[in-house]
Image 1 (cartoon, rainbow, N blue to C red):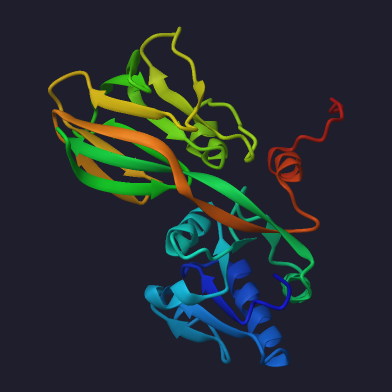
Image 2: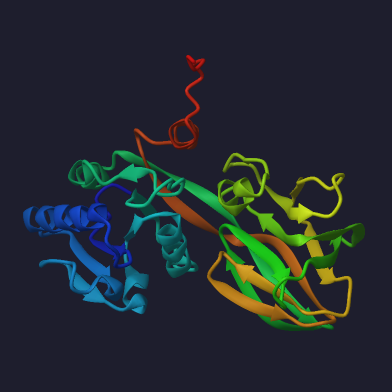
Length: 294
């Protein structure tokens, strides 16, 4: 991919982050010195970017050679949905807090851009989940997610009671505050906060994690979705909400069913030579491997 990044899109969202302003300033200065590379920022950054960076609406980012997602993991998820179906790699630049997906740092961003143009990087594909909502045999909604499908009660202050089948065989009935079905990428997001396991990004599997289940015997379950499907429906006459990557909510009415399978689409991430998943775990979670002194 050396020398192929002629048009680079920038995804970010206005806030009070000094890191975001610093990153945009570095990009503008770098762009002046490298006029062969054009930068286009999402219009949510209007008023923050400087020339020669141009501002475009979201559809304008779908013909980029690369997307820079500057922010936290939520910003990277937004970039992933822009890139979906367009084979655009993403480089996450951490201007948030933990940022498992945004591995690169704002500090030294100019050097990162130099390395990109020099081809000093690698790429990693992350699996996604296709979700299809059915009313009988009719598909009424479809979404593709990078992180997770979150099943929660449609009415506030209620628990969810759902039946889960795995590849046509009844698996179990969950009674919990909600249910998460997470990819390896999503395993370090809500799933981790809910007590689910971390899954290495190269593992072709998902994890079902009930949030605050009513039974202590119910534990997170890791399953392969390679050539297999999960079917989930409400066990009671009550609607549910399906939340896709924390962005889009679809009501699953009584009698509806959602089918989940491994997507043919993937999200491609740029990895610089100094970053990696294992390193991110050690840094973000404080896994030093050394005993702490009292």
